[in-house]
Image 1 (spheres, helix red, strand yellow):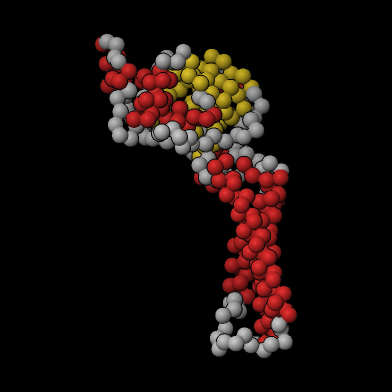
Image 2: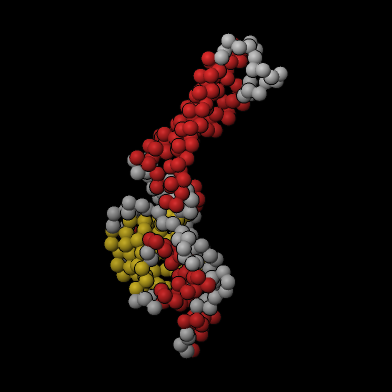
Length: 298
């Protein structure tokens, strides 16, 4: 390969890298300016993502400068060393490597920027058990029939569930349990860990309607996607609902639901289910996701 041809190859690689890096930086700015960045990353990582755009711009500028320097010095026949430290000469290898970076960039611009919905929930699988594995409370249920137990007895705990037990004591004393956005997954986890304690309690939450093929015509779930870091790790969590008017509410419709807690068996698991007493259609919130509360254990 001639020196001139080699230099042109170097320049092409530098320019393509500059375009890719600049493209990712522009994508971040584009999503942020449209208010769509929150569809892809959690609030706690947004600032870091925005700052990364500056780093990407700087890296793109360096690659562009390297291309300019190579073009400017193209009259020189060698780089002063006795080996080739440039990019691979394989067209197939280079195409595959750059395609791995180009395809996500194109998808970022071309795909519709919409919140995750029931279609993806069906693929990921709806969770009715919160973040912790459900702890059976059948023995507590039997105890409450014989006599009234103290809160500490009702919410027996171990080193892994103490935070949920303490939170459960607070929820238990409320006349109506509201699943607040700020503690969405923590509340669902607490309700699941101590199911029997909350049977008969009134619970309210807001979310989108989801149906599974194994649900009957009078059942659906009110759910939210919970995002820890980015949309790739988002998982759907919710509560099962029983209502004779279930068919009125279509998938992905947002509702605020109030119901009385009971238990049911779904996919061989004991879960908490709400007997609906009130279902109100509501517009989707500006931020459709819920997020783990990292101060919950403090």
